[in-house]
Image (cartoon, rainbow, N blue to C red):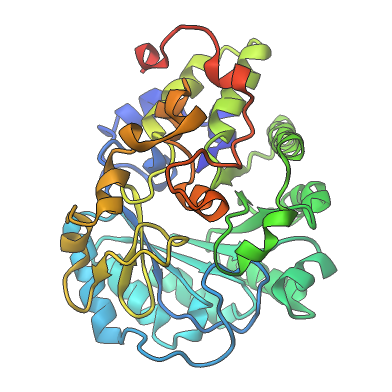
Length: 402
Protein backbone atom coordinates (compact mmCIF):
# COMPACT_ATOMS: atom_id res chain seq x y z
CA UNK A 1 0.00 0.00 0.00
CA UNK A 2 1.62 3.24 -1.19
CA UNK A 3 0.26 6.48 0.23
CA UNK A 4 0.50 8.80 -2.76
CA UNK A 5 -0.96 11.75 -0.86
CA UNK A 6 1.24 11.02 2.17
CA UNK A 7 4.47 10.78 0.19
CA UNK A 8 4.00 13.23 -2.67
CA UNK A 9 1.91 15.91 -0.98
CA UNK A 10 3.62 15.71 2.39
CA UNK A 11 0.64 14.93 4.58
CA UNK A 12 2.88 12.58 6.62
CA UNK A 13 6.48 13.05 7.75
CA UNK A 14 8.86 10.39 9.13
CA UNK A 15 8.78 12.28 12.43
CA UNK A 16 5.02 11.67 12.65
CA UNK A 17 5.68 7.94 12.74
CA UNK A 18 8.62 8.12 15.13
CA UNK A 19 6.58 10.18 17.59
CA UNK A 20 4.58 7.03 18.36
CA UNK A 21 7.58 4.72 18.46
CA UNK A 22 6.48 3.15 15.14
CA UNK A 23 4.57 0.46 17.08
CA UNK A 24 1.32 -0.78 15.55
CA UNK A 25 -0.71 -0.59 18.76
CA UNK A 26 0.25 3.06 19.30
CA UNK A 27 0.04 4.35 15.73
CA UNK A 28 -3.11 6.10 14.49
CA UNK A 29 -4.74 4.37 11.55
CA UNK A 30 -3.28 6.64 8.84
CA UNK A 31 0.26 5.71 9.97
CA UNK A 32 -0.20 1.97 10.46
CA UNK A 33 1.53 1.04 7.22
CA UNK A 34 4.78 2.41 8.67
CA UNK A 35 4.79 0.29 11.84
CA UNK A 36 8.08 -1.43 12.61
CA UNK A 37 6.66 -4.49 14.38
CA UNK A 38 4.43 -5.56 11.45
CA UNK A 39 1.78 -7.24 13.54
CA UNK A 40 -0.51 -8.55 10.83
CA UNK A 41 -3.58 -6.78 9.60
CA UNK A 42 -5.97 -9.69 9.16
CA UNK A 43 -8.42 -9.97 6.29
CA UNK A 44 -11.26 -12.19 7.46
CA UNK A 45 -13.35 -13.42 4.56
CA UNK A 46 -16.23 -13.96 6.94
CA UNK A 47 -18.49 -15.30 4.19
CA UNK A 48 -17.98 -16.49 0.65
CA UNK A 49 -21.51 -15.66 -0.46
CA UNK A 50 -21.98 -12.51 -2.54
CA UNK A 51 -24.97 -10.85 -4.19
CA UNK A 52 -22.80 -9.86 -7.18
CA UNK A 53 -20.49 -11.82 -9.47
CA UNK A 54 -17.41 -9.72 -10.10
CA UNK A 55 -15.19 -10.77 -12.98
CA UNK A 56 -11.99 -10.36 -10.92
CA UNK A 57 -13.18 -11.85 -7.61
CA UNK A 58 -10.29 -13.61 -5.87
CA UNK A 59 -12.67 -15.73 -3.75
CA UNK A 60 -14.75 -16.79 -6.79
CA UNK A 61 -17.93 -16.02 -4.87
CA UNK A 62 -21.52 -16.54 -5.99
CA UNK A 63 -24.97 -15.84 -4.59
CA UNK A 64 -25.54 -19.14 -2.85
CA UNK A 65 -24.96 -20.58 0.61
CA UNK A 66 -21.55 -22.10 1.27
CA UNK A 67 -20.99 -24.85 3.84
CA UNK A 68 -18.64 -24.68 6.81
CA UNK A 69 -18.66 -20.92 7.39
CA UNK A 70 -17.44 -20.00 10.86
CA UNK A 71 -20.15 -19.43 13.46
CA UNK A 72 -20.59 -16.28 15.49
CA UNK A 73 -18.96 -17.90 18.52
CA UNK A 74 -16.03 -19.10 16.43
CA UNK A 75 -15.71 -15.56 15.11
CA UNK A 76 -15.62 -14.18 18.64
CA UNK A 77 -12.84 -16.63 19.53
CA UNK A 78 -10.85 -15.56 16.47
CA UNK A 79 -11.23 -11.88 17.36
CA UNK A 80 -10.18 -12.46 20.96
CA UNK A 81 -7.03 -14.25 19.81
CA UNK A 82 -6.23 -11.49 17.29
CA UNK A 83 -6.61 -8.83 19.95
CA UNK A 84 -4.34 -10.68 22.37
CA UNK A 85 -1.81 -11.26 19.57
CA UNK A 86 -1.61 -7.53 18.86
CA UNK A 87 -3.33 -7.44 15.48
CA UNK A 88 -4.13 -3.75 14.88
CA UNK A 89 -6.89 -4.15 12.27
CA UNK A 90 -9.39 -6.80 11.27
CA UNK A 91 -10.87 -6.29 7.82
CA UNK A 92 -14.26 -7.95 7.36
CA UNK A 93 -14.46 -9.05 3.74
CA UNK A 94 -16.09 -11.76 1.69
CA UNK A 95 -17.83 -12.50 -0.55
CA UNK A 96 -20.06 -9.72 0.66
CA UNK A 97 -19.74 -9.37 4.44
CA UNK A 98 -23.11 -7.65 4.77
CA UNK A 99 -24.74 -10.96 3.89
CA UNK A 100 -23.69 -12.18 7.35
CA UNK A 101 -26.56 -11.25 9.70
CA UNK A 102 -24.13 -11.08 12.63
CA UNK A 103 -21.65 -8.69 10.98
CA UNK A 104 -22.52 -5.81 13.31
CA UNK A 105 -22.16 -8.09 16.35
CA UNK A 106 -18.75 -9.26 15.13
CA UNK A 107 -17.56 -5.73 14.40
CA UNK A 108 -18.82 -4.58 17.79
CA UNK A 109 -16.89 -7.35 19.53
CA UNK A 110 -13.75 -6.42 17.57
CA UNK A 111 -14.00 -2.77 18.61
CA UNK A 112 -14.64 -3.67 22.25
CA UNK A 113 -11.49 -5.80 22.17
CA UNK A 114 -9.46 -2.83 20.95
CA UNK A 115 -9.21 -3.83 17.30
CA UNK A 116 -9.88 -1.41 14.46
CA UNK A 117 -12.79 -2.83 12.48
CA UNK A 118 -12.84 -2.20 8.73
CA UNK A 119 -15.48 -3.41 6.27
CA UNK A 120 -14.71 -4.19 2.61
CA UNK A 121 -17.97 -4.29 0.64
CA UNK A 122 -19.53 -3.78 -2.77
CA UNK A 123 -21.70 -1.14 -1.11
CA UNK A 124 -24.99 -2.22 -2.63
CA UNK A 125 -26.48 -3.36 0.70
CA UNK A 126 -25.57 -0.33 2.83
CA UNK A 127 -28.91 1.13 3.87
CA UNK A 128 -29.35 4.15 6.12
CA UNK A 129 -29.87 1.73 9.01
CA UNK A 130 -26.69 -0.18 8.15
CA UNK A 131 -24.65 3.02 8.03
CA UNK A 132 -26.08 4.10 11.38
CA UNK A 133 -25.12 0.71 12.83
CA UNK A 134 -21.57 1.13 11.52
CA UNK A 135 -21.37 4.49 13.27
CA UNK A 136 -22.75 3.19 16.56
CA UNK A 137 -20.48 0.15 16.45
CA UNK A 138 -17.38 2.24 15.82
CA UNK A 139 -16.37 0.80 12.45
CA UNK A 140 -13.22 2.70 11.51
CA UNK A 141 -13.61 2.60 7.75
CA UNK A 142 -15.83 1.23 4.99
CA UNK A 143 -14.17 0.51 1.64
CA UNK A 144 -16.60 0.29 -1.28
CA UNK A 145 -15.43 -1.39 -4.49
CA UNK A 146 -16.20 0.58 -7.65
CA UNK A 147 -14.42 -0.45 -10.82
CA UNK A 148 -15.64 2.33 -13.06
CA UNK A 149 -18.45 4.77 -13.59
CA UNK A 150 -21.97 3.55 -14.33
CA UNK A 151 -22.10 0.75 -16.90
CA UNK A 152 -18.34 0.08 -16.64
CA UNK A 153 -18.71 -0.85 -12.99
CA UNK A 154 -21.86 -2.85 -13.66
CA UNK A 155 -20.06 -4.98 -16.25
CA UNK A 156 -17.33 -5.78 -13.73
CA UNK A 157 -19.87 -6.49 -11.02
CA UNK A 158 -22.09 -8.68 -13.18
CA UNK A 159 -25.23 -6.82 -12.13
CA UNK A 160 -27.06 -3.92 -13.78
CA UNK A 161 -27.66 -1.11 -11.33
CA UNK A 162 -24.75 -2.07 -9.06
CA UNK A 163 -23.10 1.33 -9.50
CA UNK A 164 -26.19 3.30 -8.48
CA UNK A 165 -26.81 1.07 -5.48
CA UNK A 166 -23.17 1.35 -4.39
CA UNK A 167 -23.35 5.14 -4.65
CA UNK A 168 -26.43 5.10 -2.44
CA UNK A 169 -24.45 3.07 0.08
CA UNK A 170 -21.55 5.53 -0.05
CA UNK A 171 -23.89 8.48 0.47
CA UNK A 172 -25.55 6.72 3.37
CA UNK A 173 -22.15 6.33 5.04
CA UNK A 174 -21.26 9.96 4.42
CA UNK A 175 -24.60 11.10 5.87
CA UNK A 176 -23.98 8.97 8.97
CA UNK A 177 -20.44 10.39 9.41
CA UNK A 178 -18.84 7.01 8.73
CA UNK A 179 -15.47 7.24 6.99
CA UNK A 180 -15.91 5.70 3.57
CA UNK A 181 -13.70 5.32 0.52
CA UNK A 182 -13.61 3.88 -2.98
CA UNK A 183 -11.56 0.88 -4.15
CA UNK A 184 -10.81 0.66 -7.89
CA UNK A 185 -8.93 -2.21 -9.58
CA UNK A 186 -7.12 -0.97 -12.69
CA UNK A 187 -7.01 -2.89 -15.96
CA UNK A 188 -7.34 -2.24 -19.68
CA UNK A 189 -11.12 -2.35 -19.57
CA UNK A 190 -11.58 0.47 -17.08
CA UNK A 191 -8.39 2.55 -16.98
CA UNK A 192 -10.06 5.27 -19.07
CA UNK A 193 -12.41 5.86 -16.13
CA UNK A 194 -9.56 6.96 -13.86
CA UNK A 195 -10.13 10.72 -14.39
CA UNK A 196 -13.84 10.32 -13.71
CA UNK A 197 -13.10 8.40 -10.51
CA UNK A 198 -11.19 11.44 -9.27
CA UNK A 199 -14.10 13.64 -10.33
CA UNK A 200 -16.43 11.38 -8.35
CA UNK A 201 -14.26 11.55 -5.24
CA UNK A 202 -14.16 15.36 -5.53
CA UNK A 203 -17.83 15.92 -6.34
CA UNK A 204 -19.18 13.50 -3.72
CA UNK A 205 -16.62 14.62 -1.10
CA UNK A 206 -15.36 11.07 -0.55
CA UNK A 207 -12.30 11.28 1.72
CA UNK A 208 -10.31 8.27 0.48
CA UNK A 209 -9.66 6.37 -2.74
CA UNK A 210 -7.46 3.30 -3.29
CA UNK A 211 -6.31 2.24 -6.74
CA UNK A 212 -5.51 -1.48 -6.87
CA UNK A 213 -3.27 -3.20 -9.40
CA UNK A 214 -4.73 -6.42 -10.79
CA UNK A 215 -3.75 -9.68 -9.06
CA UNK A 216 -4.11 -12.92 -11.02
CA UNK A 217 -6.05 -14.85 -8.38
CA UNK A 218 -9.46 -16.52 -8.43
CA UNK A 219 -11.53 -15.22 -11.34
CA UNK A 220 -8.92 -12.47 -11.69
CA UNK A 221 -6.59 -15.06 -13.24
CA UNK A 222 -8.77 -14.96 -16.35
CA UNK A 223 -8.01 -11.22 -16.71
CA UNK A 224 -4.23 -11.62 -16.94
CA UNK A 225 -4.32 -10.65 -20.62
CA UNK A 226 -6.28 -7.53 -19.69
CA UNK A 227 -3.70 -6.28 -17.21
CA UNK A 228 -2.04 -2.98 -18.02
CA UNK A 229 1.31 -3.25 -19.75
CA UNK A 230 4.24 -1.41 -18.20
CA UNK A 231 3.88 1.80 -20.17
CA UNK A 232 0.14 1.96 -19.50
CA UNK A 233 0.81 1.37 -15.81
CA UNK A 234 3.29 4.24 -15.71
CA UNK A 235 0.75 6.53 -17.38
CA UNK A 236 -1.94 5.48 -14.91
CA UNK A 237 0.30 6.04 -11.89
CA UNK A 238 1.39 9.43 -13.24
CA UNK A 239 -2.25 10.40 -13.68
CA UNK A 240 -2.99 9.33 -10.09
CA UNK A 241 -0.07 11.42 -8.81
CA UNK A 242 -1.07 14.44 -10.90
CA UNK A 243 -4.73 14.35 -9.90
CA UNK A 244 -3.85 13.84 -6.23
CA UNK A 245 -1.61 16.89 -6.32
CA UNK A 246 -4.31 18.81 -8.16
CA UNK A 247 -6.89 18.13 -5.47
CA UNK A 248 -4.46 19.24 -2.78
CA UNK A 249 -3.71 22.42 -4.72
CA UNK A 250 -7.47 23.11 -4.86
CA UNK A 251 -7.68 22.85 -1.08
CA UNK A 252 -9.45 19.49 -1.35
CA UNK A 253 -6.94 17.06 0.15
CA UNK A 254 -7.97 13.43 -0.27
CA UNK A 255 -6.21 10.32 0.98
CA UNK A 256 -5.04 8.57 -2.20
CA UNK A 257 -3.28 5.21 -2.16
CA UNK A 258 -2.17 2.57 -4.62
CA UNK A 259 -2.25 -1.08 -3.63
CA UNK A 260 -0.73 -4.42 -4.71
CA UNK A 261 2.23 -3.08 -6.66
CA UNK A 262 5.06 -1.81 -4.49
CA UNK A 263 6.98 -0.63 -7.53
CA UNK A 264 4.75 2.44 -7.20
CA UNK A 265 6.85 3.60 -4.26
CA UNK A 266 10.25 3.72 -6.00
CA UNK A 267 8.55 5.09 -9.13
CA UNK A 268 7.12 7.96 -7.09
CA UNK A 269 10.47 8.57 -5.39
CA UNK A 270 12.32 8.71 -8.74
CA UNK A 271 9.74 11.14 -10.09
CA UNK A 272 10.21 13.35 -7.02
CA UNK A 273 13.97 13.31 -7.61
CA UNK A 274 13.50 14.35 -11.25
CA UNK A 275 11.23 17.17 -10.14
CA UNK A 276 13.73 18.33 -7.53
CA UNK A 277 11.23 17.82 -4.74
CA UNK A 278 12.62 18.75 -1.32
CA UNK A 279 10.48 15.91 0.07
CA UNK A 280 12.18 13.13 -1.89
CA UNK A 281 14.43 12.01 0.97
CA UNK A 282 11.51 12.02 3.44
CA UNK A 283 9.44 9.97 0.99
CA UNK A 284 12.24 7.42 0.70
CA UNK A 285 12.51 7.15 4.48
CA UNK A 286 8.79 6.47 4.71
CA UNK A 287 9.01 3.85 1.96
CA UNK A 288 11.77 2.09 3.88
CA UNK A 289 9.68 2.27 7.06
CA UNK A 290 6.79 0.74 5.13
CA UNK A 291 9.07 -2.06 3.97
CA UNK A 292 7.11 -3.03 0.88
CA UNK A 293 4.90 -6.05 0.45
CA UNK A 294 4.25 -7.85 3.73
CA UNK A 295 2.36 -11.01 2.78
CA UNK A 296 3.01 -13.55 5.50
CA UNK A 297 4.35 -10.81 7.78
CA UNK A 298 2.19 -7.69 8.04
CA UNK A 299 -0.95 -9.00 6.39
CA UNK A 300 -2.71 -12.34 6.68
CA UNK A 301 -6.00 -13.90 5.74
CA UNK A 302 -8.58 -16.14 7.38
CA UNK A 303 -11.14 -17.77 5.10
CA UNK A 304 -14.82 -18.35 5.80
CA UNK A 305 -14.03 -21.91 6.93
CA UNK A 306 -11.18 -20.85 9.24
CA UNK A 307 -8.27 -21.64 6.90
CA UNK A 308 -5.30 -19.31 7.30
CA UNK A 309 -3.44 -18.00 4.23
CA UNK A 310 -0.36 -15.76 3.82
CA UNK A 311 -2.64 -13.19 2.19
CA UNK A 312 -6.07 -13.07 0.56
CA UNK A 313 -4.72 -14.01 -2.88
CA UNK A 314 -2.83 -17.16 -1.91
CA UNK A 315 -5.88 -19.26 -1.23
CA UNK A 316 -4.25 -22.50 -2.35
CA UNK A 317 -1.68 -22.17 0.46
CA UNK A 318 -3.07 -23.50 3.74
CA UNK A 319 -1.08 -22.67 6.87
CA UNK A 320 -3.58 -24.15 9.29
CA UNK A 321 -7.12 -23.62 10.54
CA UNK A 322 -8.28 -21.46 13.44
CA UNK A 323 -10.83 -24.11 14.35
CA UNK A 324 -7.90 -26.32 15.28
CA UNK A 325 -5.23 -23.85 16.45
CA UNK A 326 -5.31 -20.12 17.25
CA UNK A 327 -4.30 -17.75 14.47
CA UNK A 328 -1.47 -16.44 16.66
CA UNK A 329 0.04 -19.92 16.89
CA UNK A 330 -0.38 -20.64 13.18
CA UNK A 331 1.13 -17.28 12.20
CA UNK A 332 4.30 -17.80 14.22
CA UNK A 333 4.78 -21.44 13.17
CA UNK A 334 7.53 -21.55 10.53
CA UNK A 335 7.22 -25.27 9.73
CA UNK A 336 5.53 -24.34 6.43
CA UNK A 337 8.46 -23.71 4.03
CA UNK A 338 6.70 -20.92 2.14
CA UNK A 339 5.75 -19.12 5.35
CA UNK A 340 9.30 -19.38 6.64
CA UNK A 341 10.65 -17.85 3.44
CA UNK A 342 8.08 -15.05 3.43
CA UNK A 343 9.39 -13.90 6.81
CA UNK A 344 12.70 -13.15 5.09
CA UNK A 345 12.34 -13.09 1.30
CA UNK A 346 15.69 -11.60 0.35
CA UNK A 347 17.69 -14.88 0.09
CA UNK A 348 15.02 -16.53 -2.07
CA UNK A 349 14.22 -13.87 -4.67
CA UNK A 350 15.46 -14.42 -8.19
CA UNK A 351 16.34 -12.37 -11.24
CA UNK A 352 16.07 -8.59 -11.19
CA UNK A 353 14.24 -8.62 -7.86
CA UNK A 354 17.28 -10.11 -6.11
CA UNK A 355 19.59 -7.31 -7.23
CA UNK A 356 17.18 -4.38 -7.23
CA UNK A 357 18.41 -1.38 -5.23
CA UNK A 358 14.84 -0.75 -4.10
CA UNK A 359 14.42 -4.18 -2.51
CA UNK A 360 14.18 -2.75 1.01
CA UNK A 361 11.39 -0.43 -0.13
CA UNK A 362 9.48 -3.04 -2.16
CA UNK A 363 10.30 -6.44 -0.61
CA UNK A 364 10.03 -8.17 -3.95
CA UNK A 365 6.50 -6.97 -4.71
CA UNK A 366 3.65 -9.52 -4.87
CA UNK A 367 4.85 -13.13 -4.74
CA UNK A 368 1.36 -14.48 -5.42
CA UNK A 369 1.32 -12.65 -8.76
CA UNK A 370 4.79 -13.93 -9.65
CA UNK A 371 3.67 -17.49 -8.97
CA UNK A 372 0.44 -17.07 -10.95
CA UNK A 373 2.31 -15.75 -13.97
CA UNK A 374 5.39 -17.98 -13.92
CA UNK A 375 4.73 -20.94 -11.61
CA UNK A 376 7.61 -19.83 -9.41
CA UNK A 377 6.80 -17.77 -6.29
CA UNK A 378 10.35 -16.38 -6.22
CA UNK A 379 10.54 -15.22 -9.84
CA UNK A 380 10.36 -11.49 -10.58
CA UNK A 381 6.87 -10.01 -10.33
CA UNK A 382 5.84 -9.37 -13.97
CA UNK A 383 3.86 -6.30 -12.89
CA UNK A 384 7.03 -4.45 -11.85
CA UNK A 385 7.27 -1.71 -14.45
CA UNK A 386 10.57 -0.16 -13.34
CA UNK A 387 13.24 -0.31 -16.03
CA UNK A 388 16.56 -2.10 -15.57
CA UNK A 389 18.24 1.30 -15.45
CA UNK A 390 15.90 2.48 -12.70
CA UNK A 391 16.45 -0.54 -10.48
CA UNK A 392 20.24 -0.49 -10.88
CA UNK A 393 20.79 3.25 -10.60
CA UNK A 394 23.87 4.71 -9.02
CA UNK A 395 26.07 2.67 -6.66
CA UNK A 396 24.77 4.48 -3.60
CA UNK A 397 23.13 2.13 -1.10
CA UNK A 398 19.60 3.05 -0.17
CA UNK A 399 20.14 1.41 3.21
CA UNK A 400 22.31 4.35 4.20
CA UNK A 401 19.29 6.62 3.91
CA UNK A 402 17.16 4.63 6.38
